Image (cartoon, rainbow, N blue to C red; front, side, top):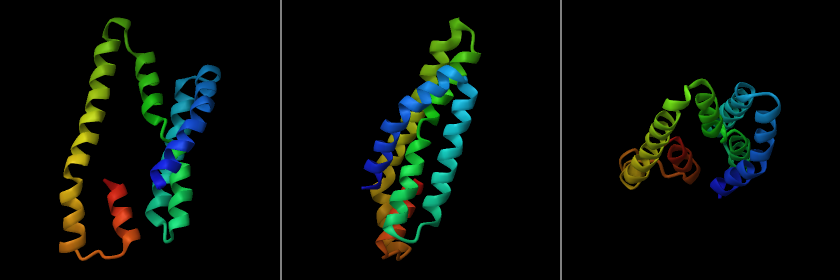
Length: 131
């Protein structure tokens, strides 16, 4: 499963990002994470084989820390008395968007397969990852 590969790479890269965060600062860690995320997303869009999807998912996994790095950057730049409110709102917004995507996925999958006639499994998988 490409999601497993992505999460495994996230688990492996988290200590690296922690080190970069401690030694270089939040901006460098955020930039590194966003670059890996961008390359991984671009790679997944261009994949033509299942093996390429796994490689791109691995690269994306190394960039999946951008949410944590964004929070670190945000917390660093906010006054202490506003930090908890803004960070909580940011996390709530991300979770609501993820939950909404999961709720509409079955209807979206049906539309892609039956109305747009996308029968190839790799294409359907790529479209689902774009959600």
